[in-house]
Length: 249
Image (cartoon, rainbow, N blue to C red; front, side):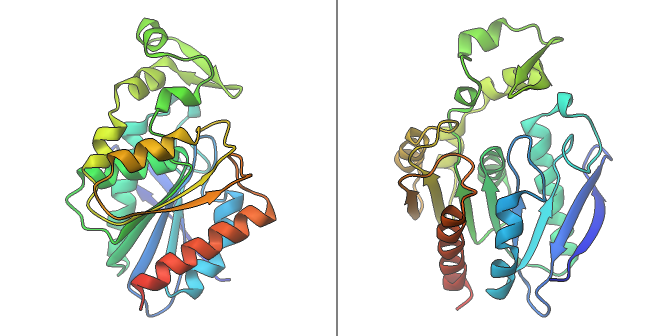
């Protein structure tokens, strides 16, 4: 499938690497935000790309600051900066003629999509969230609000073997994710594996109890966090395609 790779800049002037899978003649689109330590070329989204395009949607994927082929070092990762990256990705998509936009995110990319949608003046069609974390500190084994508060902000910690600044962990502790969910006004498709050991399934229950907009669940009963088995991707693809077709009718 043809795809267009390009760079755009975020509000700090850093280069963000992006890719568009085009659906010629369509002004509808999906922007995919990847998870922590993943990239725009993650396995799930590349497997789903052609199906999304076949539904009549342009698909844009991009690497957050500090990730993939974008500028920066993963040690300096910041959720707030990633929200800014998404804001600029939306602006870039619109410059290319896409007007009706769905935000889609996986894991930390889902958290970024929630935060952005909850505070943005832009209008979106829907949110598609895969393994969305609301208890952000819980994705770091053994981390508690008390431990986060005691960290040296000039130091660093290891998360899944990756060195990140303690400022990132302290930032996570300050974000009010349930409060952000309450501000969402668009329909939401929630996809989660019940056996997720990274983003516990209880996050989905917390999302539903906080959400005031239409919310539809797709639960993969034996699914873990990565959801990269062929059976997982088939379920996710079918759910996303059905969701998008409703908006493209």
